[in-house]
Image (cartoon, rainbow, N blue to C red; front, top):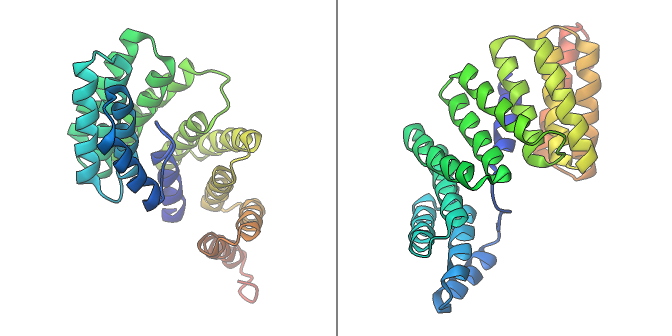
Length: 261
């Protein structure tokens, strides 16, 4: 079960706001751009991008960039920029395990998005809040926010919605409602297939397999683990391959096929 939980949670972190600039050279380029720019609107965007880019590797620096974006946004009355900055800072605190501050900034962002009727911002911030409550082990509250997000963005097939659906499946798994967990993970799998997200497909397959493994439906579990394995082989993901092989081995052990396991 631990393997499945880690993979689900990992997925949900990186889908909230901006696309991630992961390369150091890109970060350096952005820092140089903002250093020599006199355009505050441009600076706000770059500060927010730097904040998001550095949130996991250099959270203290990311926080400073987030604050810089926030101050400039307030100065110029750029309401959505302010909300984006608040949301990003909330994610930084979430990653650091400071849930009270993460909620504080996320609620601020949510209130602004609601006033401006920014449905995209509302939905993604609701997802963030759902994740915060998940880590606080307040699963019912977490579900409430995830369902609110899905209601706002009905029939939208993108990674943010798929992650929310996947995380609902995780919560039901944690609560012991395996039937609902499988149902939501299959729904998430369908969305990930539509948008062709290999990582999302792998995570959904992995978690469906874990759910069936939990109920001793080993043949079904192995089917999903095997499909997850093929995806990892296609992109030569050694860590993912190892995870899938371990899971497949578990199904064989449960079936007393030790020679194969």
